[in-house]
Length: 137
Image 1 (cartoon, rainbow, N blue to C red):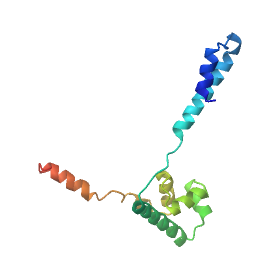
Image 2 (cartoon, rainbow, N blue to C red; image 1 turned 30 degrees about the vertical axis):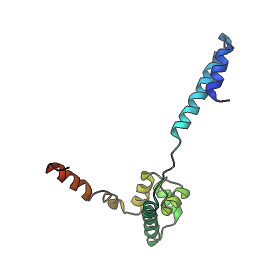
Image 3 (cartoon, rainbow, N blue to C red; image 1 turned 180 degrees about the vertical axis):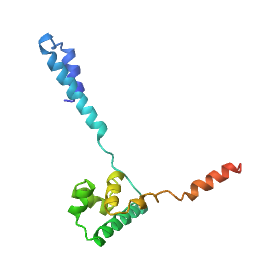
Image 4 (tube, rainbow, N blue to C red; image 1 turned 135 degrees about the vertical axis):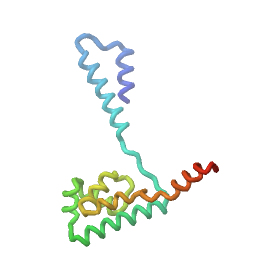
């Protein structure tokens, strides 16, 4: 039975007395924990194949950079503060890994300045802005 149904059922049967206020609080706490857990579940990131391919290339480049430096997965994952499974996912270009984890691996490899190149040259954005400045739609 779902926690919210347990609470409704308990109140409808009027089973709560002064002696079992603890039961009320623990039931409500359980319900809140379930709600928080459901809210914090990560959503699966869905990418089109060509965009997934781009991320796979990034992962492959990270793997090559690690190997060129003769660093093991254990060394990089420990220095980046992630587990080896996360590093494996990064090197595969998995979209579910956080940008922070990607950044920490890149930092360990000494490539953190490359991170600044992401979206630095926004040609499309400048073109749109120029059109608005010229009064065109």
